[in-house]
Image 1 (cartoon, rainbow, N blue to C red):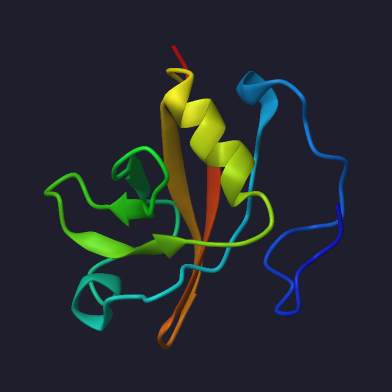
Image 2 (image 1 turned 45 degrees about the horizontal axis):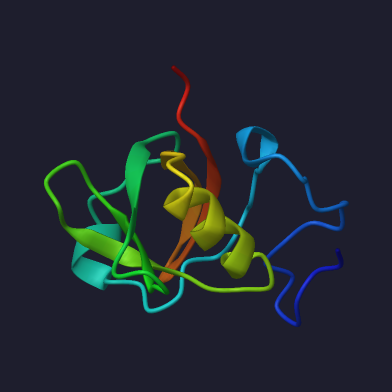
Length: 107
């Protein structure tokens, strides 16, 4: 899998197993008021709305930081629908841009 036009995802083979799926997207539709409260290393929740999305990244208080888009979105949605729970860890925040690492929540 290659990076998208904005380089949202690193070039790596797509994992077949949901337990090893790791994505590193830049959040789409970021919410400035929420981003201003986030810190590098902070853990956020990943939530699927409906059966086909969108996929939201939210604080523990339920505030939406942004949404996930990109080439691996369909795989993420399928994994969530299969019962996997994902978290998003804040990698960087630069102005209105936030990069997170999405990975399965450890048991």
